[in-house]
Each structure stands twice: as structure tokens, then as C-alpha cells.
Image (tube, rainbow, N blue to C red; front, side, top):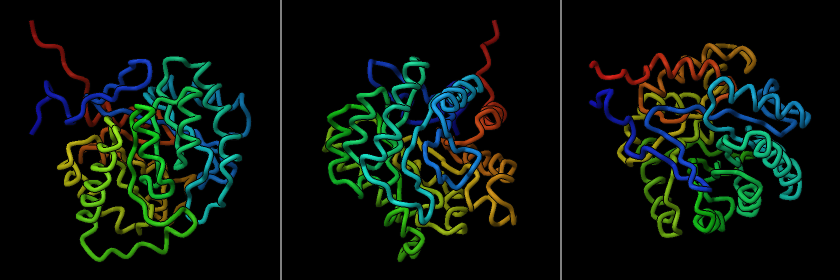
Length: 291
């Protein structure tokens, strides 16, 4: 068991454009900035440029290390939009947030390689791909060329049909370990250096499967990479409680606590202040050595 004078995670940093380094020696918070009109959590939807900057500032002030900007809704059954529409929503937002907050770490939430490349050119620091490269065969080569960190998520199918792909012939954790192992080999061959693993809670997984993954999260650490937990207000939280996403903050804090205790390095959340407080309680700041 690691002690407080050592790092929590095998990979301690992510090298971002301009030589900027994201420190993962302690867990960090990724704030969600939804640029879609149909996100499953209505409270996260952003309608104007002013609202975007206000939300970004509030998240950074509350302690978010990263801001994740997404313009393609990935909720189950979400409407498919064109690449041009995704760029129209995403690129001006990345540019605006980068201009207003030059020191923030920005993530582009997209599965399209061309969108990822243009988002990085607009100021994004890393690429967060829900499809793990399965929806655009050019993604791995593009990220390798861009030399940016990459969030590798597990999903089957597409957001439109993923709920039909929840049957796993083998143990679900073993399935993910094999999936990540094979994808990592392709990423390394493409020149991608820094990778974060995302189990994809709720993506082609039932609530019961997602909760099993959460309990067994330490088993994914055999891969030696930081883990991102995206649990915020999801159906695995609110449906078992008979609630709606709007009422799922308490449940989100509970599952985020479990994720941290099981080794998560990044919490992707709608509610930054609560996530920051959770991290501070689960992983208290390092104490200065006694004189």
C-alpha cells in the first residue's frame, strides 16, 4: 500500500502542448462543459458564449484542473450530428475559453479525428474520445501526430445503439483489460505517449455492470495508467434511487468517493466544488515534514 509521501498513480504527469504539465500525483477534477442542447442533465447545458465563460470561471475557481468541452451528445439514443455541426459548436468555444483562461487545461470531447485536430489547433490540450478510436480509424494516428494526451474509453456500438450491446461473453473486467491492452498497443505504435483509461460507466453497460466495474476498479490498475471516472449524475446513480439526474448530486458524491478509494486519478463531473471537497477528504493534502 502506498504511503502519503509517494505518488498514488504509476503515471504522475501528462505532458500537454507548450510543455505544460498536468500533475496527477493527487486526483484531479475535470469539469464538464456541455455545448449540446440535449445533454441528459439539463442543468449542464450551455446556451450562450457568456454563460460558457461564466461556467468555466466558476469551475476553475472551485478547483477544476481540467475543463472538458463536448459538442456531440453521447447520452443513450442521442441525435447524430454532422462533423460540421460539431465543429460549429465546439471550436469557437475552445477558442473563447483558451483566450479567457490561458493557464487552464482544456479537453476536447470528440470521437472524430478532424475535429480533434482542429480543437487542438484552437487551444485544446488533450483529446477525450468516447469511442476508443472505433468510430474514426484516423484518430490514433492523429493524436500521435498532435502529441497530446489521450483519454481512451471503453464503449461498444454508438451512442445511438450502445444500450443493445450490454451482453459480455466473458467477465466484464477481463473484457476491459483485454480491450485496453489491445488499444494501447495500437496507440503506442501510433506514437501516443500519455494515455488515461476510462472504463466508460454507462456506455454499453447496464447499471449493475457499471457498479461491478466501480467495485473492481483496482483491477484495471494492472495496466499502470491513470483512470478517469465519469460517474456524474448518470443513470447508474439516479435510477436505482428512483430519482432524476437533477436530484443525483448526493449519489454522485457517494460513487465518486468509491472511485477515489479504488484508485481513480480524475473525476469527470458536473459539480466541481463537491468533487474537490471529496478529493480533499479521501486524499488529504500531503503534510509538511516535521522540523
